[in-house]
Length: 363
Ligand SMILES: Nc1nc2c(c(=O)[nH]1)N[C@H]1C(S)=C(S)[C@@H](COP(=O)(O)O)O[C@H]1N2
Ligand SMILES: [Mo]
Image (cartoon, rainbow, N blue to C red; front, side):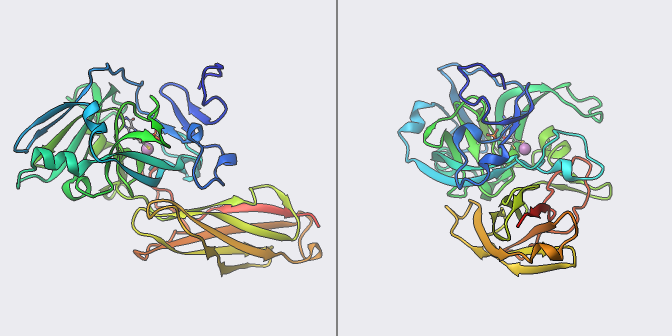
């Protein structure tokens, strides 16, 4: 991000790459229930495409009546807002060993904000989805060179395109979104129109939406089969819903604290609500786990706050560094629990392994 005075996001993001922009929510903003709009992380594969004012959305494929309508038609339809924690599937890649190729995301490629627009199902129902439909393919306006070596015979230039199963497209909270945090989408977040797919990792929420196509066989394009897949060498699985995960926002890593602390943070999952967060405390003589208290999430798709007050042992009982290691382990309604170790995968997705926060006790 440039530091031009006209740029409202200057300093509000931790830039990982300037062109195309990939930037994390700074750690200082993570304690906020709703991430301030200028600090919502950005992940773009290609340069921002240019749209003209006459941009129309088309809906074709296996429908009774193909549609083509101007963006202004969306404003006339029923508006729906969804508060959602959006996370890039590559968030935490730097925590994998060895670090896989791809954007070197630390742990800030996650944000929570309000998205609003028109439920996708309303548009699909207007077009009339045929019985043989299996997926909805979203094509974006951005494109560029593909960065894999396996593209023999394939075109060197690829468009950002993603499909989703029909039941996901028809979900009442899946949006054709025109607004973020109550304001029209910024260019970086997909202006003028994008998809928002609650519960799924970010790649499903296609920005700069150009067209929708109802399809009768599963889509096999580059961003569906070559990217956003868990490739362990033995098996290839598509990346879909966000894995259960938690972060400690206070105390911060490396900070010095008194004996009385409150461990706070967020836990989220795309597969079901968070049902439990345990905090592991290790003052050097072994780790003990306690249940944190869960607060109320802003919505079923937004991260759940947790807190646990602790009175740490007297400094005399530590080694010279007076170090305490804190860890959190979240569980969701599907029964999924954060793992100790992440299963390494070639493209570095879905790292939801338990992380440590180290603090020092000063009094
Ligand atoms: N058209 C288009 N849509 C896209 C992308 C992209 O590169 N092009 N990146 C995806 C990925 S990987 C993520 S994590 C989210 C990020 O959305 P944000 O930049 O608004 O945070 O957008 C998704 N939608
Ligand atoms: Mo992503």
